[in-house]
Image (cartoon, rainbow, N blue to C red):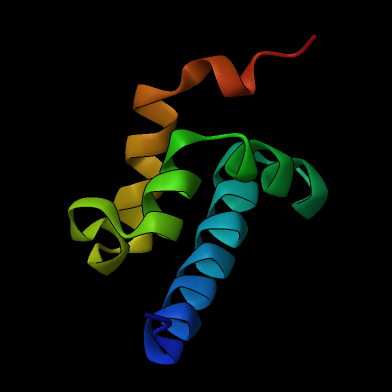
Length: 75
């Protein structure tokens, strides 16, 4: 069943994550968006697995950098 309130909250969280990721890693928003949408974190948030969408965006960015370092390797 669709939940418009959760959808709005998740979109806002994703926006904050992408902005924070760009700031922390010193990259443009396009690169940060690419990293985020290729991460398992984006899947977890979109599916609301383990209520992860209710965690703080700063914590989630630190966790993403720590647990998915392969996203940030330049090719």
